[in-house]
Length: 144
Length: 206
Image 1 (cartoon, one colour):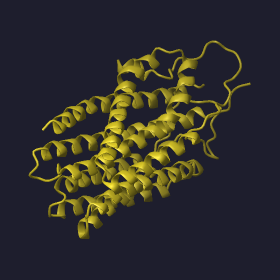
Image 2 (cartoon, rainbow over the protein chains, first blue to last red):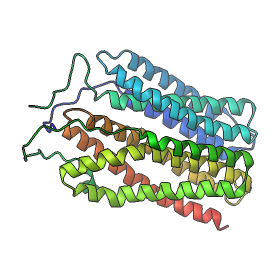
Image 3 (tube, one colour):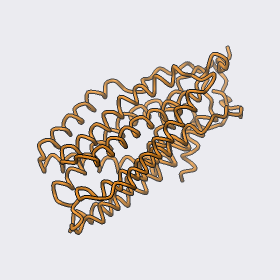
Image 4 (cartoon, rainbow over the protein chains, first blue to last red):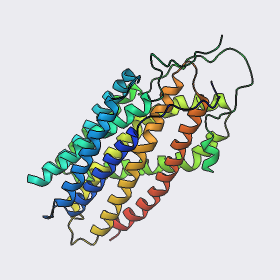
C-alpha cells in the first residue's frame, strides 16, 4: 500500500455540479410532496427543475471534455448505477402515478426523477473513475 | 469519536516488510445478495399495489428501523472500533463490509421511503388538514438532507474505497481520506435519524 502524500489530480467540479442538480430536484420534490394531493403553484418546482437541467447539462459537457480519463471505469460504475437508480426512480414515479398524480404535476415530477436518475450515476461513476489509472497515467505496481 | 473512526485504513506505513500485497479478490456488488434485493422490491410493489395496511407498515417499520439502526451503529459504534483495528484488519473488514453496504442501504432506503409515502397517503396524513401534515413535511426535509449526504458523499466514498482496494497497490492516504468521509457522513446521518425517530413516534401517537 502506498502512503506517500502524492497530490491528487484536479478536475472540474463535476461531482459538485451533480450534487447541486440532485439537491435542486430534492428540494423541488419536497415542495411537491408537501403540497400533494392539493392543487399548488408549479412555478417554484418548474424553476428548480429548469435550473437543475441546466446544471446537469453543463456537468455532462464538462465531463465529456475530459482528456485522459478512465472512461471504462466510469462506464462500468455509471452504467450499473443507472440501472439501480432507474429502479428507484421508477418506484417513486410508480407511487405517484398509482396515487392519481396527473397532468403538469406528473410531468414535473417525472422530469425531477429523470434528473435524479442521471445525476447520481454520473456522480458515482466520476467519483470512482477519477482515481483510476489511465493509459497516460498508470498507477505504480507493487514492488517485487 | 468519529476521528478515531476516520483513521480507518490508516495512513501509517506498513513496517512489517514481507511480500507485496496481493490484489484483493472480492465482489464490489455481491451477486448473491441480488435475489434478496429483487424479492424486497417485488414485495414492495405488491404492498403498494394492494394498499395493504399490514404490508405497508411492515415495509416501512422494518426498512426504517434497519436503516436507522445501521446508520447509528456504523457511525457511532462501528466507526470508532474500526479506527482502533490494525491496518490489515481494517482492510480485511472493509473489503467484506463495504460491498454489503452497497446493496443493503439503497434497498432499505427505497423500502422505507416508498412504503412510507403510500402509508401516509393511506392514513390521510398527507392531507394538509391532518395534524400530522406538518410533521411529515419536517420528515421530508430531514430525509432530503440525509439523501443528499448519503448519495452525494457517503456512497461515492464507499465505491471509491472499494475500487481503490482492488488495485495492486492501493493508495493508503486516499483510502484514509475517503473512509473519513464515509464514517463522518454515516455519523451525521445517524444523528439525523434521531430526528426521524422523534418525528415518526410523534406521528404514530396522535
